[in-house]
Length: 146
Length: 146
DNA sequence: GCTGGCCTTGACGCCGGGGGCAAGGTCTAC
DNA sequence: GTAGACCTTGCCCCCGGCGTCAAGGCCAGC
Image (cartoon, rainbow over all chains, first blue to last red):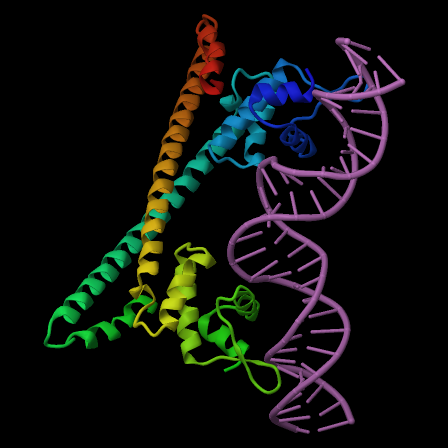
């Protein structure tokens, strides 16, 4: 199988495969004319890489899985090194989730506060008595830039 | 105030300030010798930018807030454009959170499954009767690369 | 033999948010 | 007058994961 076919069967591009090879992740044999030659096992390895990439794993993080498969294990995650990548990824995801959640909540709070202030401003402007609470509002600045 | 002092007071670098200026986000007046000259309002603007950056906003997303402040509003988020950025950021964060959570769960499931299989493999190896369920295990490959 | 489709290597581009360095100008203190 | 602390512009570098040429080789079918 040549590079174009492998790329098509894995749903990726030839450029990507050459890139993987340049990173030493998916080396290819060569046929007589210098073309890269792949077999079904390479397709398995490539699918393993792609699956992990889709999960957000970096290329280097897929390496243990690929080497595990290449060592003859039934699955890419049959080896301790792969499990270790799972665990560190899980920790990384949890940390990322916690931080994103925190940011989300803070942004939501800012949005709610800003909308409220706009509503109060509009109500004050509608009121013929004049904008009394504008004092509070202008000091509200400190809260945001604290 | 010159660039070094502003950078120090905002806890950032002169390089960053020059970058912001190159992006048209924080233009500076010039004093006679060609040095950039900033005032207290610039510090406010800069703090607004930095706060949003810390929340993960891109530079372009901070622009409405800066322009809002520069227009004389009490807070950077007093303007509709800023609120719109809040809302789209919130939606983006929610989408990101959902996807990350999904990935997290899938990775956790893969880890649990892989650890279980390793445990079964170890138990089978310990058993003197020979590895009977190895059939199941080798076909387990398809589950992962499906 | 010629067109078209595949393949090869090499090199540059991109995205964001700056880092780092060079070569030179400017001001201050001694 | 000179050290050194600041400032200026400009340019290349970084990260990852490729996309996108460019110039040329190989092979099949007509």
